[in-house]
Length: 482
Image (cartoon, rainbow, N blue to C red; front, side):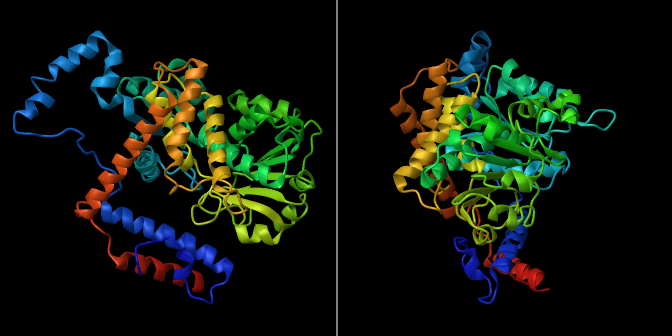
């Protein structure tokens, strides 16, 4: 068995059904992930970016020479972006209360995901990142958003941007909205703005393929957490009609008579959607989906969260985004059988991966390069437009509505679009032209990839044994076949 995982399905027995193959992939990837993380003891490390050309260079990089750097920054803090790596470093901050489909896994439980974000930022965006999983519990044992806010403010001088991650609602709203206003560097909630940006990108392409106008499109959103709440807001900013939008949380549809939402001021973002959408107060998901054009689900992991009969009642050429992780609300083949014309998930082993990884490395890189003070919703929208336009140029298809992560050329394009929007909106400290941003991002991404390849070729990054893959595959087959 080769280490290349491009065609996982071909590794399973030929008599596996589509359902068995889909389930086996999930089991295989989970088992392999655990083994690979144990083999490497995680997946990121700290490495020097400056050279050592003899013993006395230690005196340049540290004492006594570095004293000049300290006093220069003391006298002009803006020089910290030039004399240190601050301007290219992101803190990934999480209390690990809403990790993928696993919920609250405890502060340390989020390390694997946060290291993964750091890994992708470096390889896809040329950005350095530090995972910081924090214990936000107060004396009563409840997760306190004010503790996260205070923590981020304390570490702000060391970073060029903050990536909030996997913070459960309603705390995530207060944390993001407070820090966006009170910090002088971008604070970005990837589960919210990042998911909204890449979802909009995929939807724009899907609407092009099916000949729909966003303003005339009936959109149903299943799930009303940080992701779908922000997706709804971004879609409306882009032109979606709130009268044609229905959003469901675990208790039913959102509308102006949801007094339970109104009563809890912590859910102010959800209440805003109650007031803006679903004017006819449609209650059931089955009723809402009748003749709907689009279903966007970021809810409970499946594979049976979305029923095939719901999709059957949608309009011709329906668009279904089933983006729960690690298992989509309905498997793509089931959605296709039910009549979905375009189906997307959050997973890279299915076509049309609508995943934050396409957005946050480049969006953060663009914001960093112009030293933006914040990442606005409009910056997220232009990132989505850049992603969709790239896919259009490559040729849209039912199974290609958004670029894939191996199309490395898209990341500089997105970063440059974001940087230009930051300048346009007046939130950038520096004005740099489009081509300079484009070339800088290309160089930084190429350097990150070259460094990884050099470490792999020299066996500093050791090659995992094929037995690891074989054992994971055997485990998956045994799990499915019993």
